[in-house]
Amino acid sequence: MQFIAFDLESTDGSFSSGNICEFGYCIANEKFEIVERNNILIRPIGKINNAYYRVKLAYPLKVYYNSNTFVENYAKIGAILQKPDCVVLGHAIHNDIVGINSACKINTLKPFDFCFVDTQMLFSIYKNLLAVTGLDKIAEEIGAEFKHHRADEDARLSLLTLQYICEKENLSFNELMAAYEATIGINENGTITNFVSKKCLSMAPSISSKNSKRRILSKFEPKIVDENLIDKSNPLYHKRIFFSRDILLDDIDLTRAILNKMAELGAKSVNFVNRSDYYIGEPIGLENPDCVVLSMEQFMDMLGEVNIVTYDDKAILDEYMREKEERRKLDRIKHVNDSNKNKN
Image 1 (cartoon, rainbow, N blue to C red):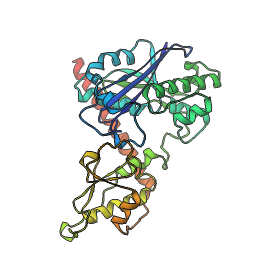
Image 2: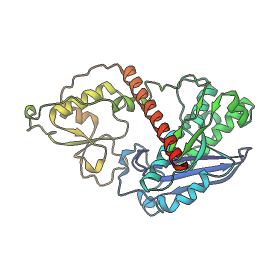
Image 3: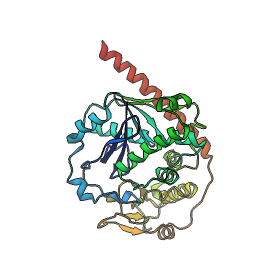
């Protein structure tokens, strides 16, 4: 058996866009000895400014744009992920699988089929933690050098994480799966069946995590404002506002108040910096901006007073997770029906 650890990087920070710029991987034998390692660079789709990231990518954007496309790398990536008698692994691997599936879908290519495990969940079980742990913190614990946000480095640390857990538990991989009562995840025809474990303290995400905050905010809709009541002379009227990555996650009650106040002024939030009038935050990686760059403090001065309201975020997150699970059930039913149709 072999282990295939992989990780993706993206120029726009979105997994579902399929806009991959790095596919990093490590192949190891049963003794966790790395026999192959590489970082496949991929040309992004269209021209995208990486200011969305608060950390820089491993290479300048021009390096990615001079690389082969995902279509040109498709066969190579497929041969890696679909090696016979192997287990694919990654840290928070669900996001990376979504990225791979999205890239295949966008380019009308058949998705890759493989089974997988999530080292983030395994480490949480090993440490008996409710919260998840990032690779940088794990690197500190196991004493490994680590260059974050380079795909092959993240893949290597995922592999080292699994090796560390197996050694500390004094178990082989198969014995570890049995001890943790884990069910291997499967990616088949673009449908993901998640890696799960009965030993996981909580399959529900922490309400204070960044992912949970993003989910909670995705359920928020700014209040509807009558256009006729908006003061059209205010400087933010009809302006498009781009917030740098994670700046809105520190205090999501404040964030919702900001979004409501923007609605009152006729402004709206946008997801792409090249479509914005104002960029809010530290402009790391922002090259030749066509928009006005403001700190959060400067932007708050422009907004004026905001009305902060406290919401029942646990109920909102629970609703999000119920809807997500319902979508997964429908996807599984559709997958089974499509498979039956193909057999007939």
